[in-house]
Image 1 (tube, rainbow, N blue to C red):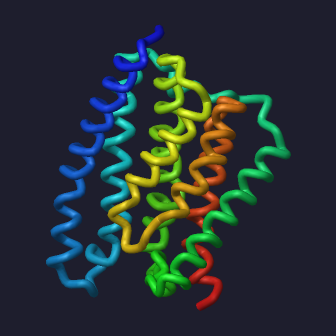
Image 2 (tube, one colour):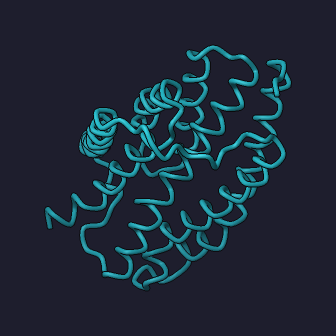
Image 3 (cartoon, rainbow, N blue to C red):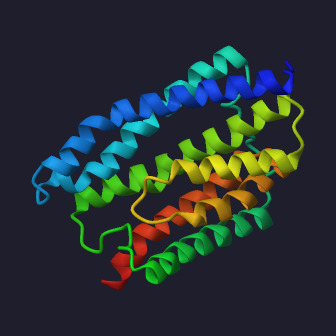
Length: 221
């Protein structure tokens, strides 16, 4: 299946609009809990992670429906041929990404996004949501789905990388600090996916970044 460039852009924009509207809808109860609830309660402290779980669940359902409509074969993952060298590069990329987040927070006097004291239950929720599910969902959306759609429109790799990186950056504009790291590190992530067409490398890099962000404050505490 192929599309003209205008039709491809239109279909991408329509699906992203659905994703945005649905994410805002499922996020609303947790935003109310976060801003109006008692900040000392377990639910209030876990609200960001619970919101991430809800948004990820919605986006995965949306991707499943989109996959049936577009027949993109999004859920096919190569079970062999993974390269150890590329895995190591992905891990290093994830660690560098988290280091850049720490430096941005230091330079901008922004609070580091992960708490240094958490209960076991909230830690497990954070690992499940921020550490594992969010990286998988975001890489499926901004790398595998987006690249697959743009390839159907015969866009050049440079254009795909630029759009993927800019959209990934825009998604994080609501974060407490300026997430220029998302713009910088989206470039090698998208390049890796275009080169290998194996989303596992991107998920590994993203998960390492987020898990390192959870672990660093705990190790320093």
